[in-house]
Image 1: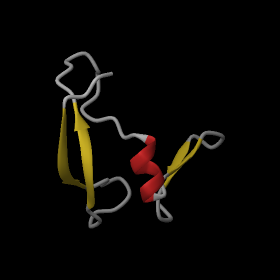
Image 2: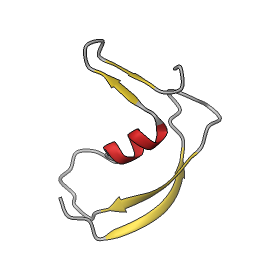
Image 3: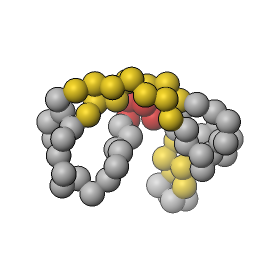
Length: 64
């Protein structure tokens, strides 16, 4: 996948927290065929401390 731009954004992961806001610089593409509005990469997941638990089929973030 090729990206053309960067955009600093503030977003929330409401499934985990109603009040926490994430501040991140995302890479942006104009591709229409991804099938997703956003793809969260390993870089942001590592920085935020998000854990993918494949054996339990769950995602953990700050105790949620």
